[in-house]
Amino acid sequence: MNLKESIIEKIKAREILDSRGNPTIEVEVVLANGSIGRSSVPSGASVGRHEAVELRDGDDSRYNGLGVLKALENVNGDIASCISGMSALEQLSIDRALIDLDGTANKGRYGANAILGASLAVARAGANFLDVPLYRYLGGIGHNTLPVPMLNILNGGKHARNSTDFQEFMIVPVGVTGFAQAMRMSSEIYHSLYRILSDKDLSTNVGDEGGFAPPLSSNKEAVNLILQAINLAGYQAGKDCFIALDVAASSFYEDSRYVLSCEDVVLSSAEMINYYADLVAEFPIISIEDGLAEDDWEGWEQLMDRIGGGVQIVGDDLYVTNPERLARGIRNNVSNSILIKLNQIGTLSETLAVVHKAQSAGWTTIISHRSGETEDNAIADLAVAVGASFIKSGAPCRSERLAKYNRLICIEDELGTGATYYGMASLFNLKKESWKH
Ligand code: PGA
Ligand code: ZN
Image 1: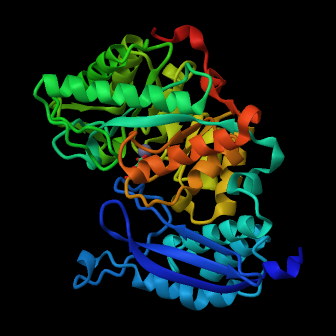
Image 2: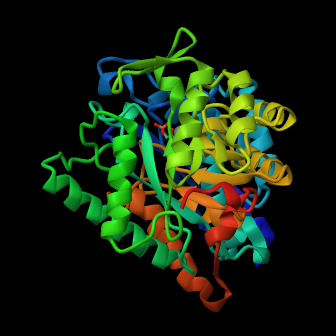
Image 3: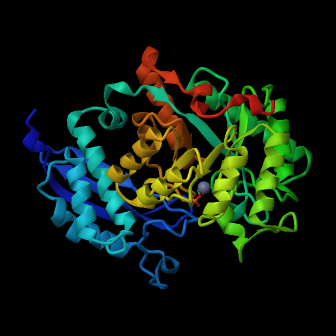
């Protein structure tokens, strides 16, 4: 193999559509030996205020202003000139060149969508050049553990109008020994939930991430329905399967108050913390993401103090996969876990650095999709490569969600007897005595 052949010869972007039917960017990188890497970029709905910039055209005559032709031109023009001639195997140098080229703190000049598309397509091309799977290329021989899936089977918040205030009610199938078994349990629970909703004459339409989105009057009602579904499928909540929430609290934070319109209550930060303390005392909930708003740092500290010993406290909008915000979180002990989204920061190398920083602090990491997805399954490989405890990719429904889970089933199969499943060990940093069974 001639390493000189790993030089980037061509890079090209096109405008494709995501799972919501909105435009997004796909990037293709071609190397001197003909190896190709292709990547497409997802898009959020409950976007954190501190995320890197997703460049949209704002031209109302196309796609309601959501076109990405400017981002596309940035890839085909300046980004292509910048990294052509570099070796695809030099990921860090390429990502640094892209960061320098952009020159802003939030990738506002070229767009995080343009930059990430290029960064990930380069990684794919590098793996293809060496003829190794992406998880091996990114993770080496030391990473053979499959993450626990967190499956959002009931959607609310910004992903499903008229449903709950909380955005996501997830099942966490820890009590099995393999990833494929975890998916079987999850699918059976999902279909039990379908039956329960049908029997109650509740809507079985699904939200953006494939979970059901019935009109419910409280968040507790949603948790109760999921507990019934776990039971109906023949599994034991609090042993085989736990529940996790993504509250996405920034989406209902107004004038320093949490407005739960479904339940018709308005709570202060301290009251919200009491609400969670009661919830985890009553139900087998082991993880709460974005329980408080993205800039309510004091609230986060108190929430962590109060229930963080036994519950995974996850920052998504709080950290936006940003190293400086993560550093503040570690310094002030405001959580014990971080959600990782590549497009919140905009390059693969920066994402890897954030994962390592969180892991060094003894935190769990959750590699995550966005509510607007594509069929790209790179996050599945990334989760294995970094030894992440969890992957969050929506319900076991809709192919853009399943693309990631199915890729993990394939990786598990490929690893054969070398594969392990994280299972209960995924919750390594929690004290289990306080759990509700
Ligand atoms: P988003 O939601 O992709 O719409 O931002 C996902 C999440 O909040 O985790
Ligand atoms: Zn979230």
